[in-house]
Amino acid sequence: MKDITRAVVAIIVVCIILFIINLQLDKTSGRSGKDSLSVYNWGEYIDPELVTQFEKETGINVVYETFDSNEAMMTKIENGGTSYDVAMPSEYAIEKMKKNDLLIPIDQSKIPNLKNIDPYFLNLPFDPGNKYSIPYFWGTVGIAFNPSLLDGQTFESWEDLWDPSLKQEVILVDGAREVLGMGLNTLGYSLNTKDEDQLQEATDKLKTLSPNIKAIIGDEIVETMRRSESAVALVWSGQAADIMYVNEDIDYVVPSEGSNLWFDNMIIPKTAANVEGAHKFINFMLDPKIAAQNADYVGYSTPNEQAIKLMDPEVTGDERFYPTEEMRERLEVYKNLGVETLGKYNELFLEFKMDAQ
Image (cartoon, rainbow, N blue to C red; front, side, top):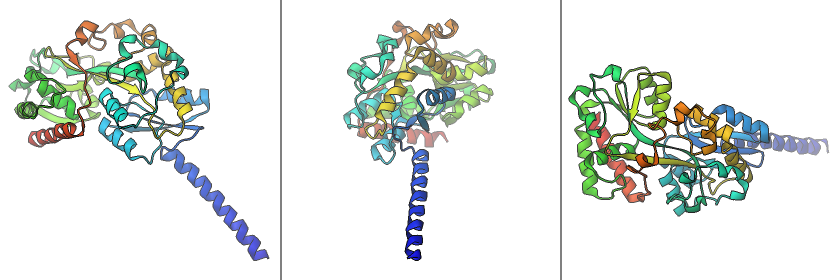
């Protein structure tokens, strides 16, 4: 009888241990429930203090993971296995995720702070009525450069990057659409072209830039430019602001031929385990004070017009990072081009990278 009792006790103890281990795995693997929230975001794209503040205010534990491309983010969500509650994809990714039934509709009655968003950033073509996404940040793609390392060069045109004096001085952000887009802009083509002849022409044009290319990198581009280790870089506007905050020699420009105008929005993936908490988090991030603090930390442009009123006018009045509507007219928003065409962009980008080595 004692042996049976010991066996039962042992089984109970093992079950308790397994239960505790499972809870820990839930926390570390991104799985969430009503007491935790799994957030999937770009690197360096939120003020950590705000995550802590949200946890204190709501009692919800935030499990935070990062991704380095829209494609990587979409693949992980599509494959399942991890219940992300909130993610911050770009507009063309949202369009694709919506088409593939990967999103849960937003209950706007639970997002009262939506009223703080500038109407310009609402009801855009990739998500009419903001049924599936809420604005987070926006910006442009352009050229960050250090005049102190240059001999009077300016970058009014994308063609200026091909100046022979810039040999081994140009850094490119590691993004297929950004780099191919630069080639397309230089030739006067659309950033959303599906024409394979135009794409190949843009790739061939980029290959002639190879002598000037120092590196094709990701987030490291910020530190490299801060330390004046390179003179010129193709960057997202927020990266430029981040660089300029530390190195005042740096300037940023969007060339005259035009460029990309992008939007990153908050969404609730289909696999979310804490939909209620997701709405609380999104609404929290739209509070004017929270949004202002987040924009100051991240460096990207906020669509929150009430937050802008709380920010430094020198920042929000800087047309390099808050371009006027007139200036935005010459910029183009990425569209979802479909799997086949995106595959072609990635293939040609890889071809170019191999040539640039």
